[in-house]
Length: 246
Ligand SMILES: [Fe+2]
View: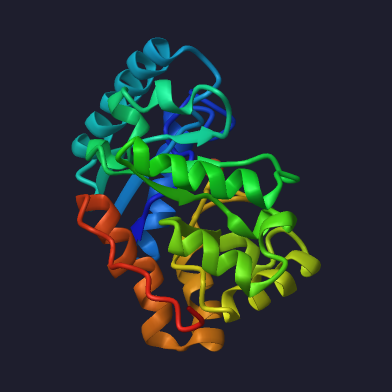
């Protein structure tokens, strides 16, 4: 499996507190069959240049440890960008695209962001020559009220993702029920761990994939943790979305 959203990089954000925790998180990822981990630290906490230098430094540190311990996992670097004025500026930095491919970027929004704003960002991404991967779409109540909103976002080029933990009940029963309903619409394309630590919010992609399989079937669930995120890892083109309703 490929995980394209997590905070396993040590000491750069609210994720892993140190190398030791990063390694514990990676061990749990490996045990559940994750072979590729794309590190996506929060990008807006410091200036673009500073973030780039810090992320590269920590990434190299983690890579060296993985190599030294001979862990069977590939690491990539990207980031998670909070919606704000500086998205277009940030995109010039290598870490602002997922795995440095200058193709996809991971974007998150404040919870109550209106649907139109999310749609506008998705449309703007085209001008920036990038494809937006929307982090934890299940958290934006103003942007999933009806299928029409989801169809519009996808038709405009958004790739909608869901946090694995929402589906496994990590964020409570209400969120779990909602995540199941949203997944059943068929508009969520990727499950991501969004792992922050080695305990409460760690990698749970395998458990989430199994939950998803009950709702959308095993083939579609595997697609969400393997084929779809692999496209992003390699910067391959995304299949054009054809809406049945259009
Ligand atoms: Fe995140």
